[in-house]
Image 1: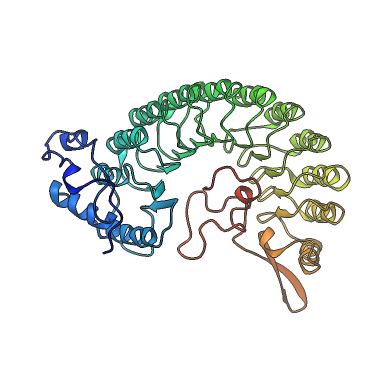
Image 2: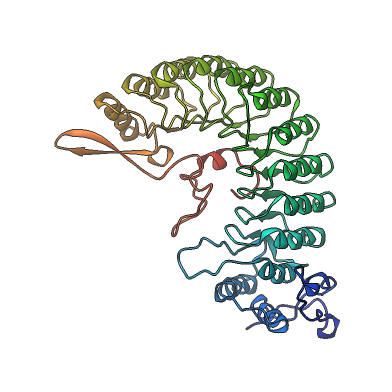
Length: 451
């Protein structure tokens, strides 16, 4: 294997001490002044595993070999992808101890600036090593820890490590049950950290207290551009989260992307958000999917769209706006709004009348380029309307989630795998993981370079 130019001589690397039987290994705590390894990453991983009597994972070896090849080609800005949900080859998921080895490999490495360890088992033990990595590694800009069994204690360690970190731009904690306690530490971190641009704490079991804390902090924070607060654990019917997030949107002049999926938003909460959107001049991507918004909420949103000049992507999927709500939106888009680029009304109980109205608005609106309608009730007029849009070139096939086909002289629509964020929870087994057609929301409103 071709070796990289070394940054220090072989004698400068201090070997770690022997393994310990304690829950937090002493050898992991002893690491921390090692210089850049002499050989490639694959060789260094093998050496560390042999020294520590750790099991050598063939999957990690394979990934490191690929990274070594990229480094030999002179590539920089590499993401080390050790995702535990890869279906193309046998994967043994990374544990906290395995993650310590990866952190040792990454420390001070100038070629790697991203680490993706989604769907593994690093737990709070691995979170402590991730915290140390954030304190020591000054090239890392992307860290994906989604679904790794990290709890409130691990969340606290990572949040506190970001108090002094000045390089990380995008952190995904998705699916780790850090709960309200961990969420409070991340909210407090945003009062101090001035480099993080995108934070995903969706599906983390946040409570109302931490949601309010995020909303309060973001009235002052001028760095965060993207925030995901999907599926908090909320109680009561007062829609407090929308009240506080609406107030934040009135004050904040930096946030570009906001996800509020599964916030139990009803029409009253939608009105709170719309009142804020009259004043906000920075938000470009609003996700209120999987809520309880009906046609009355669309009256408010349609009125906002008549005057708002910043919103470019709106995700209304899995609500219940029905024909009346679709008609309100189509009227605003046809005659007033010239800013919105993408609209998703997937699974909204819309029938032919409303779907045809939305298709007609595209004929007079030159800006709306992406529309997603699957999961509604298609009639013959709907199928013909969207088939015509696609065939005349007004709606590109990559910009919608339906594809027309003809059987016995009748037009039908089939579903295709396009959308605003199809690969939020998973990546495809083949093809391009971050394709613009499947992740149009992040393509049209880019915040950071990763999902």
